[in-house]
Length: 316
Image 1 (cartoon, helix red, strand yellow):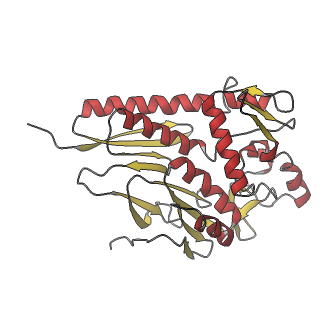
Image 2 (spheres, helix red, strand yellow):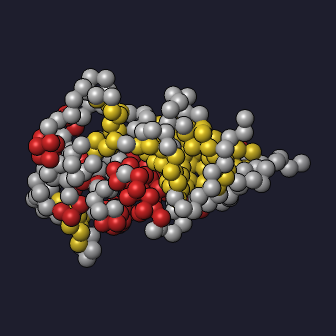
Image 3 (cartoon, one colour):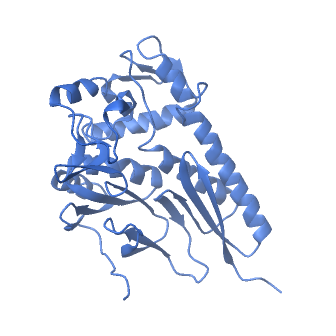
């Protein structure tokens, strides 16, 4: 007697976020062994990229800012190299040197009642400049030119970890599944019923996170960035917890940006810069990129989509 395939899930807090991993299999024991291996891989990536451990490669780079280059693993070097390419593509709207920002100025909660003056804001972002991250491909080193500079992978790390977990699962023979890293998710294969995975796009106006639309996808990734979960309301205007690296001010005007891309690392990394760039410039960027789509909801609840996307309304 053969058991029909089912979905086996694991939910765990990793990298400071809720990860939910799902695999399709008729063998529950084997599926759980595969999930263990994927979680081990995410934990390994967390140890490498975290800024909360002094011995992490990220912190070694930061500790030697303005002092000397630091040799890193090929994995870290490659992730930084791809990050810098994205910075150039987005004209600095995506920038891993955001870690230089002084967090004391931004408390995105009810206690924040005013923005800092523009002069202070500009001083705060002085060290944010991806062009001052110098890579040496021969020595495989990373050097931050200015003292006080810091890099962080908050804008790309979850997506990267999701893709690596997917790689581990596929290498073990998992033919269908989803890795969801706090809303940055990657899919492959089909559901047990043979249909594509159905992904809900959260309604930014509902605290219940109900979906306002659905996407049927397979072998694609989705990431959402928005101001609906963490923001400050100042003089009736909503400011997202995302800071524009050029001005030092929090971005405003959009509630959420959802990116659909071939992999979660890219989707994760593009969501924030589109939020920073604004509707017109952000959509213009996405419309120039192949195999990437975008859904934006602005502060007035107007829905915008890139040229290549069809939305399905939820069934009533």
